[in-house]
Image: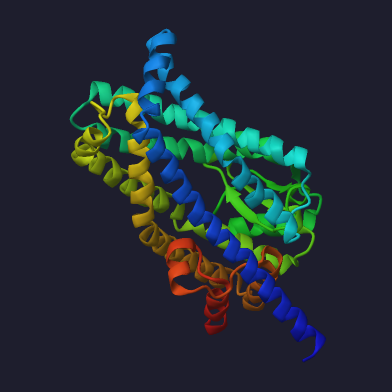
Length: 373
């Protein structure tokens, strides 16, 4: 066996070990969260917490932020060992991150605060609609979710991404003009092209076309911009532009909204039975929040294969259009090979793994598709 073959086999083995750990942690995290929620309900802690917060917090509308804050902090602390090992130790162990511990910890705090704010907005709207529209609240909340998703899509590039990465306009004017020409060719208007300092946190590579309306912009990780050819960068951005051209973002929001609507309707129809089990009077009682979360987790697991299938179809369509527009088949194949090696991707997963964990076609499948064109 030659050296090149040995290196290839070693890289495949490393990818398998890394992705196996990721799958295991995803399963363990889900089970762990379900167990914690059940303990929270069965032990009566949720009722005690809701009662005490309502008693000591004034005015009453601060009860939801107070309850949610305590729950968030408790879960953050209980999950911290797993989260630290999963997102810091493992990433460093497989040489995918060079982020310092202090920077990682700061990112975790920022992500937790953002998650808390978004969750609080959704919960406040949920309880307000539940109170004022008791018969069709599940539909009203679903419509709000669509609206809120569109707002988030617009705000992510201008508020959330800058909290974690620094934007820098392209210094490579040749590449910038090539991307702008590609956008014009695909009839897409963009604000500009930006590079972000991915390398300060991770050695993985990524590119995206983010934003909505006047916030649309191209972002390239410096780990991709500095190591990939112009042709490879053009074809990956053609893929991202294809998502916008084919209205995939709207389609995914619609699919997610349908899933949420079904979840809420299921809660509306069946929650009274489960509330009785835990001696809870109404879904509007904040102490019943863990019941709602359990519904979403279980229904999310059930819906995951379907949502992943839809996403894989959209990704395949984006690949097809990108190849048609650019004609860069060889660049696409070399791009997939490089991304697979750099990100330690599972190139050919087991069908069950693909069903539950892959919202993109596996790398080998994407390469076969390109070769057939």
